[in-house]
Every structure is written in C-alpha cells, then in structure tokens.
Image (cartoon, rainbow, N blue to C red):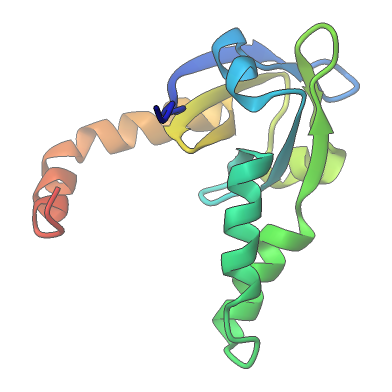
Amino acid sequence: MTIITMFIGEYSHSVDQKGRCAVPTKFRKLLGSNAVVTRGLDNSLFLYTNKEWKKLAEKLAALPFSHKQSRAFARLMLAGAMEVTIDKQGRIMLPDYLRTFAKIKKKAVMAGLYNRIEIWDKAAWEKYKKATEKESGTIAEDLFELGI
C-alpha cells in the first residue's frame, strides 16, 4: 500500500530574532527531522522533504549547463539551498540570506503545496493571495486550456 503524503493548508507563525520559525505539527510529521529550504519563486522560500529535494536536485543537475536560463535557475535553487533540522520545539532556522531574499520579518506564513511548503512574509502572502483571488476566474480559464 502506498501512503500519499501531501502538504496542504496555510499557517501563520512568528519568526524570532534568531530566524527560528515553528513548523505546523501536520507538516512536521511529513517532513521528518530534517528538510531542505531554498529560494523559491515570487519572493517566497520553498521547503522540501529530503526525498522531494533529491528528486528536484537531480532534475536541476540534468539541465543543460550550456543554456543560460538553465544555469540561472539551477543556481537560484541549488546554491540557495540549506539543510535544516527541526528542533525539539518544532522550529526550523531560516538563514539570514533566505529571510532577506523573501523579505520575511516577524511573521511568516507556511502554505502547503502538495510536495513542498512555501514560506512567505505574512504581509507579502496576504497581498499576493488577495491579488490572486481577484484574478481567480481568469486563472481558472487559463488552466482549463492545460486540462485542469
């Protein structure tokens, strides 16, 4: 029997002065004791299980290095990656350079997106979500063309 694990839902947490942020209990169970956090898209961070990170890293490593966009995307994701450990209080340490990249200040949102968790500055997440909700009809039409 295959057990399907997926991250869903959104949770808001404080980020302390050292850059520690609690991981929701539901997410901790799926992540295990270690995970990988890296630069994401739209000024967010991506948090992966080790298994999912390995799959993504292999795909990135297989991209043609002669292609400028491939090199740029691989650098964004791979060079920005950091292994994180979930401490006894259920927190991870978000490195300074990643918090700076995502403009995360005192409040963060962790949003489950099936095989990864996105980590956003709370204000940025609210702004993004509001704009996306406003465009939901157009987005749905565009995705219909992709078979969704």
